Length: 184
Image (cartoon, rainbow, N blue to C red; front, side):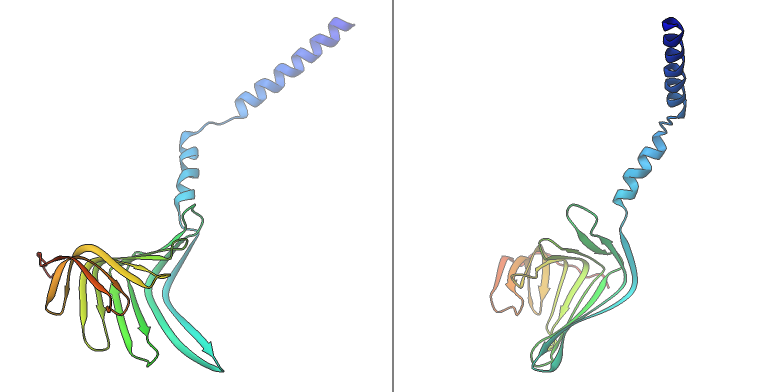
């Protein structure tokens, strides 16, 4: 009787193991798809018109207006960011309602560091008609600080690399002169 019971247990275990073996499907393509999905954006938005306002003493003041054809949200990553693959137009308003226009062909906003990376035909046009041109520009939102290591043109000045506050009052050039070409 004991032999018969052990024989039944062996057959049952063998049947379970064989079933598990054949039911496991180790398809490498499926495993790769999981990795791809983790690299996909968690959200996508089109035709963005975002207004950033401030409320003081029962009055609402427009501080900035961001326009973009497309935004990809990668907040599902360890180092979260938002990507604007088709560029941005950003209008920034000062206390006197003067408008500064910032444009670029591509942008990334890093959530954790509050750094904005603007790339491709970056232009900052102030209300006084002064315009800065460069191919890449970083903006630290916490410190309100601009910087680049790329060639730039600002009025009659040009150079390679600079650091500045947002109002260009504390402006430091890294290298005066240098080559700068426009793509018209």
